[in-house]
Length: 403
Image (cartoon, rainbow, N blue to C red):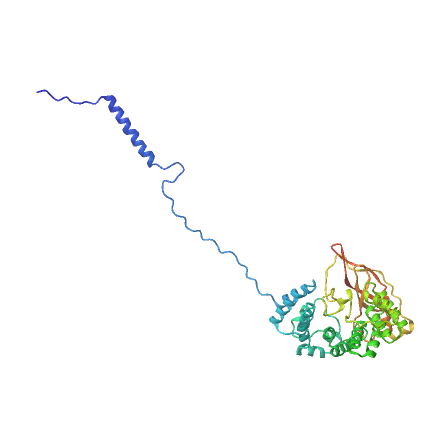
């Protein structure tokens, strides 16, 4: 029996097989190993980071005096509609106050809400303010810092404001009876103001009272000798009564006092035509830049405003001759007496309008007022300047009366 041959493996083949097994094992390990720069374990999901809530600033409500200050600041920039919103907001915060009601009424008129202003001026609160004539210390214009007067619940102002505002609106509404009544109250409150007499003259003239209309126009022209509206109205009445030479003088004076106002120039031209009829009576109280003195007008600047300028107006020509001895003797002065006159100064430095403090004829005779205001018309100023631009504004000028 032949034995079966044994198959034996050569050493070389055994070495090759071991090498293959080794390479195969290394390959498996390489596939299972993590890639460089990678974590061997799956990263855990990120938890949301709790962030602090955004800081919220809770504004505390404004105090009434702060709202009042905002309203006054807006008025001083001529933003009467926005000021009116703040004043009404203030009224809702602290209740009615006669000074506040008056401020609301004036701003309503200035933004064109004449009917609302009319109703407010005739409310019981302001009717009581009109009747409050006690205390001479309150017969002065409101100061520019007047916000405190709007929140104390009492009337601190001057009844003249109510009468004058009612008269202006009545004149604009052609309510001549009311205009005469309120203009009379206004003129009685400021007996030496030519503008009050002018408003009364206009109201009486439109109401058909020729005698009062002409007399008041002449008185206004005497008190404020360079008020062109007064001279113009006096000229119209002279023309209506057939005194054409006198009418020409008055109209020429009105044209000279304000060369930019066309109305007296046109009246002079028509006056020269044979058989020409007098012009119609005026429908406006004050014209042009002078309209800023109308309480219910939006024209500025108002006397109660405060505006910061780079340069304030300065006098460059300020003659102050004394009244005649016979007139000055009526004052019974023992020492030099100061009067501070408010003057509206134009952008070119010209005096456009003037206001005296409240005085009675017992204190200062009308002849003295005529003399002083006649001089003011010739004063010249350097105008107020802001950002290298001239501005129209009010200036306070001292006038010294010698004994």
